[in-house]
Length: 174
Image 1 (cartoon, rainbow, N blue to C red):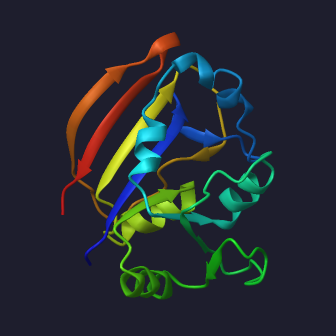
Image 2: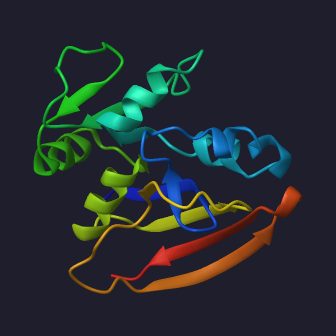
């Protein structure tokens, strides 16, 4: 596998990426207060975005398409393959990985809880950048689900952003 898979995501302090209904207003209402998180620089280094159906449907609710100029792949067993000409829908992880390899994808952004969990379990993640918002939301969609084995990480750096946000970078040990 010649591609590099990275995660760049925000969580509440209690480890949730969204409320149970998928809403992220707890983040968007305060996110700009964090200042420069490095997201734009990160996105400039990415050629492909991989997400699941829930994340794709959330992105469709935005006022603009944030992935112009990027290949966008959606991993979903239920999404209509012809849902949007800007994306390619994959039914299986193996099919997705084959497409990424065939196309020569270099740096891939894995986004969405289930996709991140799937990539972690399959040993496909290389790095994690996690920005923690100073808020407890109590319940919701966890960033990390149950694991059948430990995944060792190397801590590279932690930065304090504005308004109490903290960002940590990790490399996944293989």
